[in-house]
Amino acid sequence: MLTANIERDLNVVEERTVRIDMDKLVSICRRRGFIFPSSEIYGGLSGCWDYGPLGVELKRNVKDAWWRAMVQERDDMVGLETSILMHPRTWEASGHVAGFSDPLAECKQCHQRWRVDELKEKACPACGGELTESRQFNLMFKTFAGPVEDAASVVYLRPETAQGMFVNFQNIVDTSRKKLPFGIAQIGRSFRNEITTGNFIFRSREFEQMEIEFFVKPGTDEKWFQYWLQTRMNWYAERLGIRKENLRLRQHEKEELAHYAKGCYDVNYQFPIGWAELEGIANRGDFDLTQHAKFSGKSLDYFDDETKERFIPYVIEPSAGVDRSVLAVLCDAYDEDTADGEPRSLFRFHPNVAPIKVAVLPLSKKETLSPLAKQIHTDLRQCWTVQYDDTQSIGRRYRRQDEIGTPFCVTVDFQSLEDNRVTIRERDRMNQIRVPVTGLRNTIAAKLGGEDLFILPPGGEIWKKGGEK
Ligand code: GAP
Image 1 (tube, rainbow, N blue to C red):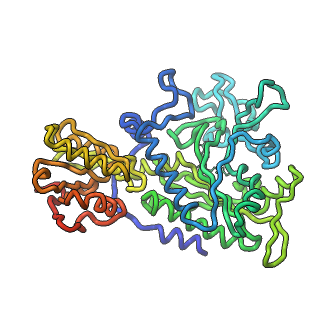
Image 2 (image 1 turned 180 degrees about the horizontal axis):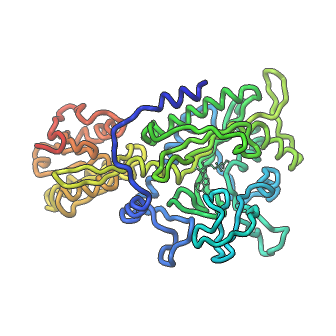
Image 3 (image 1 turned 180 degrees about the vertical axis):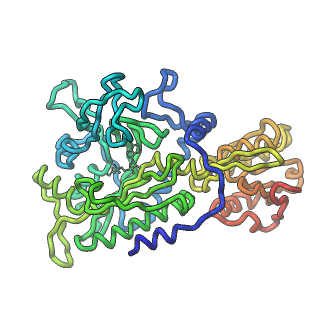
C-alpha cells in the first residue's frame, strides 16, 4: 500500500531536542510581533487573532509557498478567488445547513457551554455542575444581505472555501480549456462559530484555508487520492521545512467520515498539544457536483472528448489550514542553544518562510559606514525582505535577528571601505564568510536556495567557523 510507504519515507529523525509549549509560544509570538490577540485593548475577542509585522510576512510566505507549488508550477491546476458570501442555497446543497454542527451542552450551574464530544467526563469542566441534554449547534455564522433583516435575506459567512470552487466548475471548464484530470485551487478566509476555541491559532472562529478541488474520472480516484497524500506530505517537509518526524498521516475510521467522503486522511503534525490535524485530504466522490446540479437545476457533468462519455467527475480534496501551517512552522522552527557563552533562543525558519531574509548591519553607526551599508540595503531589498539595523552592539543585533529567524546577516565594517567586501553570517551555525560586494546578491540568492555557506564565490573566503575567530 502506497500510504504505508509514505509513512516510512518520512520517518527520518533529525536532531533537535527543544520542544516549545503553547503558553511560551503565545508569549514569544506576542513579544516579537508575530501574533497578537484580536482587539486586545478591549480585552480580546475569543477565537480571533491579529498577525503583527513579522507574522503577516510569515503567513504570506506560507501562502505563497502553497500557491507556487500547487498552482504556478503545475499545468493541471488553476487558481480562483470566490466571494465569502454566497447564495444561501449553496449551503443547503452542500449539507451545511442540515449537518454542519457539533453537539453542545450547557452547565445548569455556571451556564458555560461545552462541545460534548470533546468532554472527558459528563460534568461541567469549569465547576463540576450538571450538564443539559446535548443538542446540535450549527457552526455557520449567519448574517443578512441588504437593509432588511428577515428570513429571505439570510446569508452565511462561508465555513469553507470549497463550495466556491464547486459552483464555478462549469465556468472553469468553459473558460480555461482544462481537461480532466485538473484542479481548482483557492486561498481565503473561512468562518466557523466554534463552540470552544483555543490552543492559540489552532482553532479560531475566523481563519484561512488553502484548498484544492481536484477533478478526476471516476475509477481513477483511488490513484489520485494516493498521489495527493504523497504530494501534500512532501510539501510540508520540502517547502515549509517541517521536520518529517513531526508529520504523519492518519486514516479516518468509517464512523468519522464526513457525509460526503468516500475516504479521508488527516495530515497530522506533532503540536505541543499532541498529534493534531493540519490538513484533511478527502475523496469526495461525485457528491458535491451532483448536489449542486440538483439544487441549481444546471448540468454539471463533463464530456470526455476522447471516449465521448458524459459523467460527473469525482473530486479529491486536499484542504489545509493557513493558520495551522503557520503554527506548525513556528513550533517546528523554535530552538534554544548558546552563542558566545550566552543562552540563545531562535527560530530556525526555512528560508522560504522566514519573515526577514537578510539583515544589513553596519558595524558602527559612524557616518563613514552608512553610505555603503545603505547602498547594500537598497540593492538587496529589490529581491527580498531586508532589515537595516545600526543600533546597539553587533552581538545584540545578531541575537535580535536570530530571535525572529532571519537566515543571514550582512555586516559592513571599516575594512569593507578598503576591500569592498562584507561578511555574511548565518543564523544556524553562526558561521561567517567574507565576500565581494559585487557578488553579494547572487551569493545570498544561492544560500537562500539551500547552497552551503562555505561554497564561496570568486574572491570569497571562510572567515569564522561556528562564531570562533
Ligand atoms: N473543505 C473541507 C474542509 O473544510 P476541514 O477539515 O473542516 O475540511 C480543513 O478543514 C482545514 O481547515 C483543517 O485541516 C484545518 O487546518 C483548517 N481549519 C478548520 N477549522 C479551523 C478552525 N476553527 N481554526 C483554524 N483552522 C481550521
